[in-house]
Image (cartoon, rainbow, N blue to C red; front, side, top):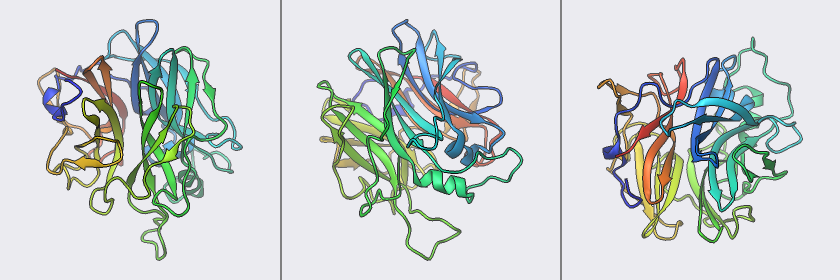
Length: 349
């Protein structure tokens, strides 16, 4: 599939039954892949132990790992923990999530979400849910940062401060996460991100935040400093509740795929939406267009409805997108009732 197309789902090949990445005893999510200097494909993913619930366990105990495969399809084999908890005094000291691996010249850049909270770890026997004080604190402290290395094998240098922070008087005053970077030829970076704002009382069901919104920032160099480019969300979050953006350069500017939370944009809850932009700031969302579906055909000729198509990530070979990676589950209600989660590799025609 070339960079200028938007009908991603039309290019899906049957999915290998033994591809992708999963780990016994862990929830696995957020897979992004890069061709390493050793000629193998390296997936950077997030994981956390199944002693915690899938949601909101990621908020307090996620770590970023690296897995490897000789082919983009996989299966990927766990190699090492890349980033993990390093202390509550750090902005990313308790949980790291949403890895997005990319490269500029001879340097690998790992964008990710980090958070912290000043409390003890969750005990495996306690009832842990979204109303727990640890998760409320962790969610409100979500920020975006980077780690860099000259090798896909590390060592990785983490920053002591996030590259992007919240703004008290804007739509992104509550949290910032889900980094979607696009590094330009000169080393500058356009960064689309997910944000939320604090709700004003009265609260419904204890919800302290508004719906998901997307914002955009820019830096003359991918290490920063980053400047917010908009004071309002890229799309009307009351009508278009979108998350998990992925962006890339096309011949006319930028393209984006993302997850449709309500299904009112593409016609399928959790399906894929497509948007394009000339400058990365003003985006044209294709309402009524479905970039991809949760109904996927596998190599055994069976079509299965997946619980999720989250955190989409395209692997490019030059100007051609060769594989789509997504985080998915075996649940019928997204990941809320899932028993297993894993990262899929979908070959593209």
